Image (cartoon, rainbow, N blue to C red):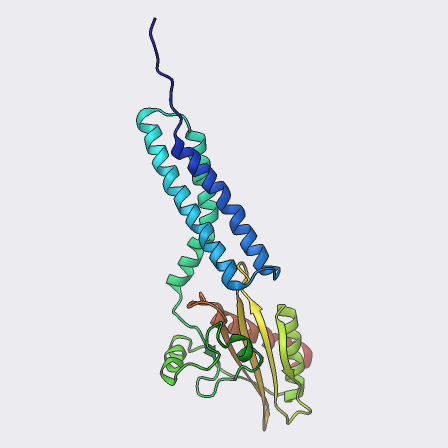
Length: 259
């Protein structure tokens, strides 16, 4: 009678499936916990990095298990494929962030006024000792950022500063930003400002935004500045946020005052 040795199951495939299946819920918990305010940013980021690490191990283990299974016919192909799929789903946000980092210049503090950027007040107290510095970058850095974002500059309108402030505040509320501090102009010849926190779309990372409104002889001028609280990259969020806000403000002023 012909004896056939029992086929062995790939232990590496099982480890891959387990690690991959663990990494995705871990990532979801970190993202959801941070967006809901249950976790500090540094804790959530640490858990996200751990999830990405487990997913990377699951992907490598799944690929190695697949190679072994293909070579000697061991059992566990479904486990290896499952681990690879779980890992790819978990690593998709990391791949997207890497793509954004490679395709956008490093810009951590961008303002429409490179010479005299608006100052943070409320955010300055929150960021001292924990986050990126709230002070404006050096003149050389501001000049570099200005060269990278030449389309970003002050906007001027033919309405008073008090009317412009009201429209700008409505746009801040529509954007879902959390207002930290505000100063409403007493009239069309007074200054105004709005300071708020905006969050990134997926991970909910906090970025500080300050809006300054200045009266001018023929109307009012608005300046913006945005800076991420955490991390060494903003993945293009800052310039994109300013462009989108000012474009929306243009349309809102036209819709409200017709000019």
